[in-house]
Length: 246
Image (cartoon, rainbow, N blue to C red; front, top):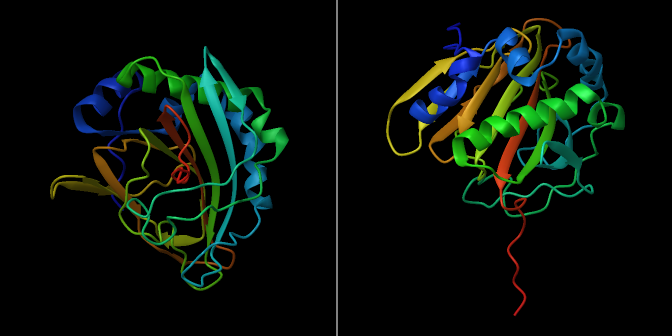
């Protein structure tokens, strides 16, 4: 397994600007968001209480998730009314084009000071890249398990999310093999691959410039799974169905 090409916190913005992506090791991620490890460990248990994803179109039973939306403005992360997740077919051929409503992330998670601080600090890095913005953030808690013998972190394949920036943080990896992260240029053949193994390792993506995917996982032991937190940040508005009214 190839390790991530780790960037120091102070070089994060410059690296994303230059290459379109960067990876932070756990210490670097904690430094960027201004949190202690025990503050994040306190919310990790919530990944064991994720309901099954009811919208998988490949017939699988391997994905569990929760979802929440926020607006980050003036140094504050504001929880938005619960809403469906929507992507256009252009960005997600498998699950795009229809509204997917998931159970909300638990209040003890979304209300935790470390959680709110994380959103504010990551939004600040995005503003350093794209100019000061009101950021519309969608948060996804994922557990990919091996119930079916194989779990697919990205069943849609290599993709963009239709946002400005994406943060993928590994929460836990237990009893599985596979799960290699792959990042490709959106307009060319260049790419890189690596495997995130340590909790709180984080991939940062400029979504307009990079495609990404994670290869399937298989079990090494009963109950094997891979947990991640995916945060997407978009300026202007949340993604939603086009307004077709006359």
